[in-house]
Amino acid sequence: MSVRLAPDGTFVYGQPRLAPDGTYVGGGVPRLAPDGTYVGGIPRLAPNGKYVAGKPTLAPDGTYVGGKFYLTPKGTYVGDGSV
Image (cartoon, rainbow, N blue to C red):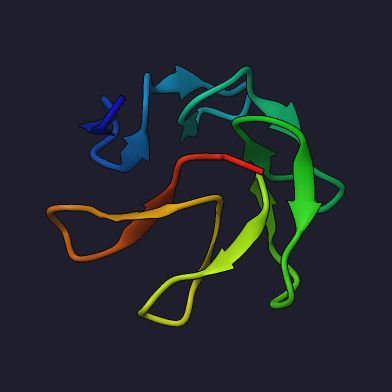
């Protein structure tokens, strides 16, 4: 798998999947988190109050992603959803 560009211009890890709200998630089936956002797997609460798919991991830019982080061409980070 790798970082991929979704049709809306965002980057995701793995196959971009369209969520019911029109956003794209990477990895697994889009699942609704308690805060109303969608993630590509089982939602887990990160220390910053956001939900991620996979084990919350702090990326070098201070954001949390699910699992191992990967740098995108835009300079942001996405997670692979691993636990």
